[in-house]
Image (tube, rainbow, N blue to C red):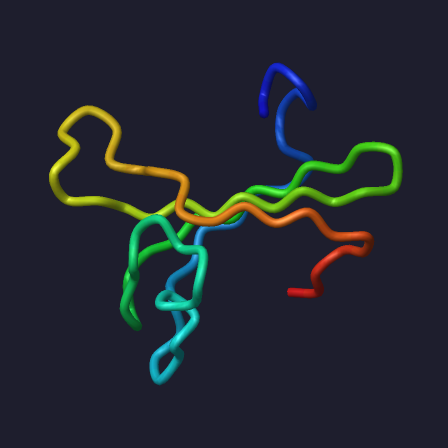
Length: 79
């Protein structure tokens, strides 16, 4: 993705909201539970928005962040 689009337009660190099932939706590579840290990167290219969400996995010593979900959208997701 970085080679194709360059660096992200926006980056956000947050956590899965308490009481949310966001981290267990279909398509997730790594399941996440409420309170788990999550990173969101947004790339913009030719009017399309590409979102990558990263889960922090405990078994990776050097870089614990792994892509867990990717979505392409025709509009920006509001924060």
